[in-house]
Image 1 (cartoon, one colour):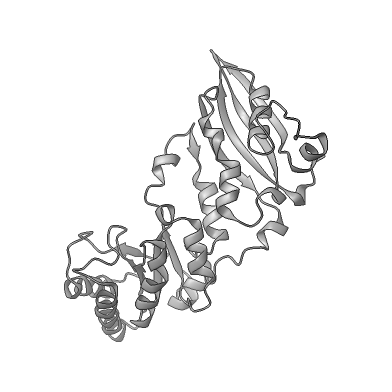
Image 2: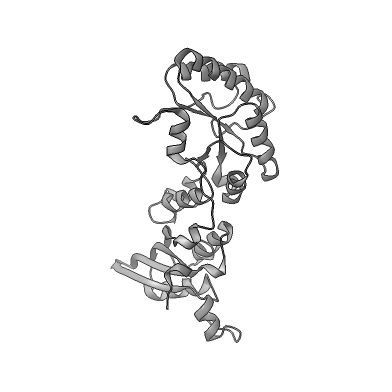
Length: 293
């Protein structure tokens, strides 16, 4: 019996030369209580309480492969409101199984009770628009180029010109964070002074998202440095730093600016239509962990 409020249902696309229904049952077992072959400790009661259950299998035989969409329900009690353990459950050893030619995690159906365990974004799209005072048109954003190598003063001048030109949102490139030639505190201070000057001329605000990506132990320090020097937005490369790093940043009460997430390295597991993890899953998890955009 599946109680919807107590499970997260993962939807996958799978390809296998074997029975898709059998492969799905084995996957549900391996990603919860066992490996398909029961041990003496894997009791019926344990399986009923903690075992993942197959919800549906929609299989079509095409050539030598069985392809289709399958759904597996995973008990929330197995991982709790912990994104690393959720991902380990729904996207762990499943991807290593030799009998599965391809598998793509397409979506997660998450019940309201689980959603309530997360604080989510502080601003979102509507809050960002409110900061900018723009409600009736698309927001225009840009990235300062070249990606790396600009001294803070030159970077700030480029930001000024973009702002005067009508840009609402400026972000660091994902390739620059806190290099010796452009430390966060110096680059942020220079850029915000330039954007204040642009606002005086145009009467319009421009957000600047400072990239605070770093080793996890340094992220909060980078954020504090950026904000103390006037940053109006923060940016983090969420795939390489991890969802928990984003959550740590977003749930800190001292962070009172929007957080912009960059997707670099995402295509390594999202580009194939048949294998990997979909953008929808990544976007949902980032939202849970506090990404504003």
